[in-house]
Structures are given as structure tokens and as C-alpha cells.
Length: 210
Length: 246
Picture 1 (tube, helix red, strand yellow):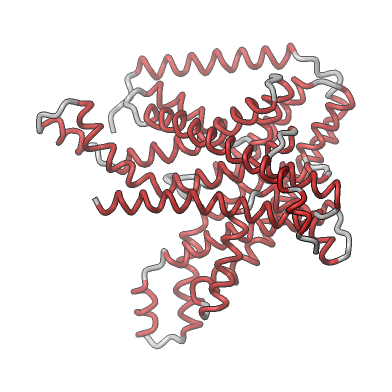
Picture 2 (cartoon, rainbow over the protein chains, first blue to last red):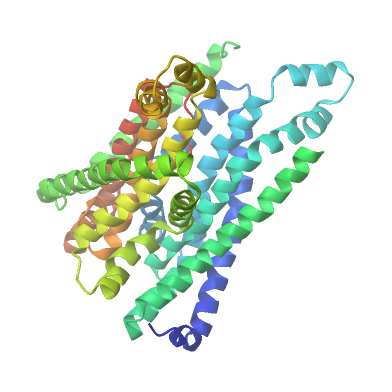
């Protein structure tokens, strides 16, 4: 064991971590926006919208992430970073759409009627009655979706984006110190996942306490 | 449940028909002559991906059972060990686990592993950790009253588990177990990174040899979609309301 190698490569590891962090954050935001939107449309009354959004999730969920990634990178010809981001957003948004749809379904339709009959406007019903309850139901599954995004970012190393996994492999190739590098990277990934879980759990507790 | 308006149903059907027709036309327009000679190679590689997923699933279930039992019923220290093992694997990217087993483990043990064994090993580890959580959820899904009732009837703890808890738990966790196979099948595509000739690598290799990206990407997408969709339909058969989440 030669842990000093990590200190020697600290700049590479730090830049890899920064890239993983940036891609994760952007992909989480993007996948949440797209996924919640698709999920809301899925819960709409229109048959056409239900089928269209259903096809969207079915298609994206049954293809591995790297098939989408390589398609966007090699066939469509996007640059590496946009391809990585688009693939991650497409992939996770399908799951988040399902989480959103089942979250909305868990709040009974009677609640909308009750809100309307109390004299609230339709947007007020959604804003004040449906949304708070849906968010509460959605937080636990969303936490695992976000952890998935962080883990899935490691796939971008395969198209040459210099993220944490890529740097680990680089250290392994240059110095044969794969064990030390892999340990460091694994711990950093766990730290990121732990941070997301921590933040989401706190938010969840606040929601329940209300 | 409100009836969908028939106009929308028809618009949808026409849309599907147009999409199918255009896709079918597109497929015939592609140049298949360079891809066609490789069909056996590609089909065989798809079979290899299935084999990887199924064997890893079998090993995974065998390992997940004791892990889950330890996590639920175990004494404090083994329970903590099982919990940390499961959580560590679940928090680590799948690609990192594959690299761990292939590149890093030989450094520690001093003996080389083949890419195929590394792929099988890492997929089994991944399957075991996720399946252990499925089994745990299954065990929790059996109400405690069932156990108490069985105990009150005079059954010994082992008999209670074997005759009362396990059969009900298995039935409850079946959809989730099969659903994990979808996720595992998609994960097999990552072993391409360590040089295993799975479906993904076979398609890339064919493309490098004959350069026909459009037909080959179609084959790639179709191979994975049909495989995963088939497993999904099996899950829906067991439980139509099951929510496939990962």
C-alpha cells in the first residue's frame, strides 16, 4: 500500500470529483424538471397524453444508460459533456416521471373536488392541497433516484469525460496503484451519496413535522 | 375511471400506425448487407448477455438470502456487518464495482481473474446487495401477528420461518425479484468496459469492422429493449399494479 500516491494525484482526483459533482448536480436538476413534467402529464385526464408519456417512460426505461449515451455521442455526434448530460437526464427522468405519477395518484382525486368546493381556484388547489402532500410521498423514492444519478455519472468515463472514475483508471494505468485510487474514489462516491441522503432526510423530517 | 374519448383513442391509433409505418420504411431503407453476415455472432452475444444476467441473478439470490436474514434477525455485530456491506455496494457506482473486481482485486490477492469471471463476480455482488434489500422488504411484508400466531400454535422458531414467514414473503417479493433482473440485464452492458464480449461489445466490434452505425444501433436498441420489455411483461403478469422502480 502506498497511500502517498493519492496526495501526489490530489489535483487529478479533485478535478475528477468536481466534474462528477457538476454533472450530478446538473443532471439531478434536469431530470427532476423533465421527470416531474412528464409525470404530471401522465396523470392528466387526456388519453393521448397518457399514452405518449407512457411510451416515453417505457422506451427509456428498457434501454441501458450506455446505449443512450453512445447513441448521443457516436451516432448523433454531440460533444462529450452535453451527450453525457442529455443521456443522464433522459434516463433518470423516466424513473422520476413514474415516481411523480404514483405520488400524484396517492393523493385522492376527492381532494381536488373538496378544494374546489371550498372555493379555491384550480391552481390554488394544486399549490396548497395537492403539491404539499405529493412532495411528502415523493421524497423517499426521489432520494434513491438522486443517488442513482450520482452513481450513473461514472458511466461518462467511457466516452472520455475526466470524471472521478476516469481519473481513478488513469492513476491505475500510470502507477498501478489501482487499489488506493479505487478506495479513494469509492469513498468519495459514498460521501456524495451520503450527503444527498442526509439533505433529503432532513427535508423529509421537516415535511413530516409540519 | 373515466372512459377515454373515442376521438383521442383514434388519434393515438393513427399516430401509432404512422410511426410504425415510417419506422418500417426506414428499416428497409437502411443498408443491411454489411450487417447481415454477423447476425449469428450478434445473436450469440445477446445470449451471452442473458446468460451473464441469469447466472449473476442465481448467485445473487443465493447470497442475498443469508445477507437479508442476518440484517433482519442477526445478532448485533453480524447485522451491522451485513448492513454496511449492502449499503456500501449500493452506494458505489456499478462501473466502479466492475473495475474493483477486475483491476483491483488481483492486486490484493495476487492472482489474475479473467474478464469473464470478473464480470460474473461483480454482477453477482451487485445483484446480491440489491436482492438482499428485496428479500428484507419481503420478510418485513409478513405481519408480525402471523409469526406470533404460529408461535402460539406451538411451532418452533425455525418451523415458523420455514412454514409461515418464508412462503408469504416469497410470494410478496416475487415481482420485485423479477424486476431486479431488468436492472441487472441493463447493468450487464457495462462489462463491455473490461473487454467481455457481451451484446454491447459485440455490436461495437461489428461496427468497427464493417462501419454501419445506423443499422447496428437499431439492432443494439432492439436487442436490449425486447429483452428488458419481456422481463417487464413477466413482472406485470405477476402483479399488474407493480411499480418498477430501481
